[in-house]
Image 1: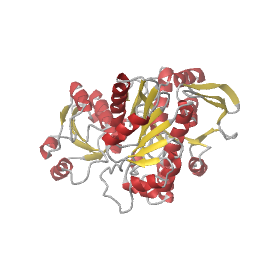
Image 2: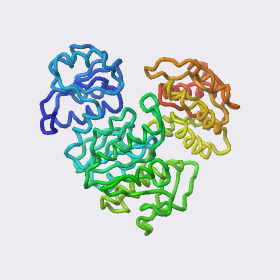
Image 3: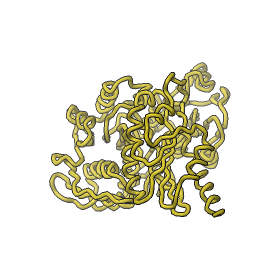
Image 4: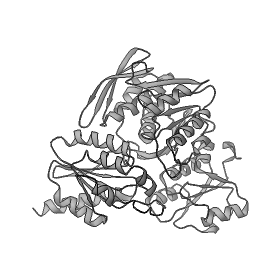
Length: 462
């Protein structure tokens, strides 16, 4: 096992370095003086940026790339048969998962891991911005880009390290943080967790890794998170939510088209208002979690609230890609029925008198099979939904599972598997004042700019 003090001058090779999580770890490793190399399936702006920072990058996977490495790190998207991973094993080079590498990088910090089925990226980002506003300059590694800084990872000068803790493959038990947030606990990642009980057990295992002198912040409004909080023993537990018995109690919630507001009471005493420049009831909860951590750490309420008020969002989380002729185009990562419901609820207020038009791309056959009825129900909040074919994410098709089946069960759904035909259709039907959302965890995000370009041409010709 490596220690953080050994990293300077060590050669670290990242397989899948172009991914959001892996590229962030590579940047932090470079600041520790490590020699960084990495490979991905194709060239990208991420690889170019890492190269500019001094990393050696490759736009293909070849076994020779790992030769000479002291440590090889791979993302969970990399299979055991990958040529570089297999060759590293043959050479006896130590091999770490992304989670193990992140645990190494935050091992000397006061680490705070943000976990939960939904809201991890936004909550991690909010906590980071709130801590920054208090002048403590935390390190962070997050699965999405903080809009204000344009970064998803940073090595700070302060003692805190905020890390998004991904539960999808159970590897978040590697982090062993000082403190943690669990936003909610719900069944997802059905390719790994067969039942809801399996998810519950994984979060129990994660909570058990929190430092004995650390803390758990949990949501009292979410049944899964509340149940976890009630089971945790021997560490400090802090609750947040509209539940009147919460340590951080939220009330007087006000939801507007582009913002949200609520009063915050810490141990029964009002400390001010959460004033957020992001919409949605779910973001009040995300901000409350971040605020509870900061208050528990002894940071000033005023600084934390000011930081949260300045939060401008994260990439792919209700991200405005552009406005053309009064038509707003939003991109969002939501890919679970619960995420879709809260996103479309916020989008309905955002649209005002306009219509809400959605292009949705289901993510993974296994998830789609498990939640077909729930997807149809959540998507019913939109006026019109175009369903693309399922983004496989390396899974093989499952008989009888398709976007077309979901569309057939909806009053407002149309199945258009072709990207070009889908964008043409939505560009043709949209009217000024409407809102378009590209929704899903796959490559549907690429459609936003195409739609904006198409709208620009459409209205230029009118």
